[in-house]
Image (cartoon, rainbow, N blue to C red; front, side, top):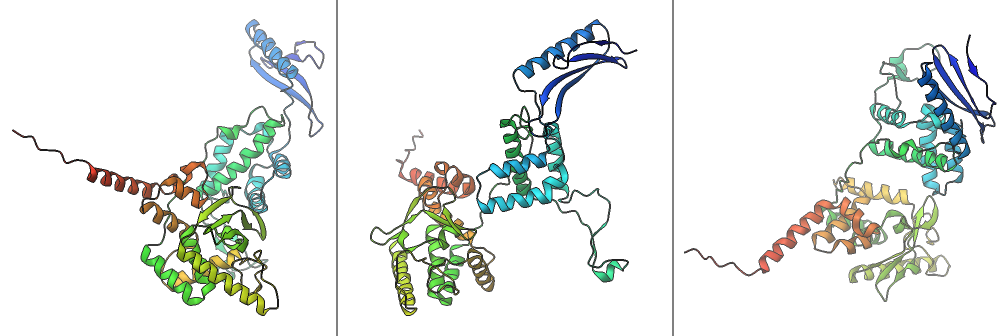
Length: 420
């Protein structure tokens, strides 16, 4: 017969069963589910030493309850994700991206797991599976998709056999960031005692590999852009000379350009069809060269004439660049349309590049010319006093450092050969 040391529910009990001691202590009501929560432990053996360990474990549980750290919620990760997304202040575009990862990848795999049961091993195993196959298949062949219902010939109906495709390391890192943020909130809300994502290993971040166009390619791109039309040529030229981000470029208003001081005052960014703060939430002023100022003045004159012909009044609040659908410049150029038009132009010229590479071109040209890292970082809008710029453009910084060494060496006094 099982032997039990009687104790009240709130003081806990130790029960002898099947050659072991079961320790249990009531710790309260789950704040989310409303269910009773018990702390449990098993001590192997029934001798006096085992009873002593069980007594110590029960005392440990009582201490935890007194410190109010024992009411471990049994809520699932799926519920915690919903709560974290509900209270998090994130950009609409980021929220949409996170929702996609949660619904397609995280929730189907581990959404039903209680947050208190998640540990670093579980998370690392999940990430490993995603790096092997994004659908986390069992490794056995199967038909991935059907275009017809009922019995049919898979060959003639276009069905395809599943092929494992690993999820990109950068994507897995984003998924980890979502899980880590959620579990961090769960820790703050006392649903778990610690955040296992803090110590879980995630795929290493791939070193940045900027691939800017060469000076010859940049010249061809600029020439072709102006051949297409002056507005488009000015837009491409401005990216080359300032390194502006796409959202900053299309969201640029004439009011942000100080033609007398020859600077652009960047305060806003156009993302997801809305005007927002810049990516780093910091304002920055970019100095302009004389040629760029002339081009922007010509752009202002063209827009003013365009608006006048439409019977409207020109104001500095109008956007510098606009698509054909809004000739009055009250709406900016569509970011996606800019990207696609640039890609089509580059493809036509036989140049394998993309719009963001012009930002790399601006940075690498400045660094190659010997401009200091902090100045380049300021023009690009990088934070961290140049740390991001150094990480992305390390190769060009190293080349500049080599050039500096050669310059200094050439200025040193010549050593006299004192051989006897």
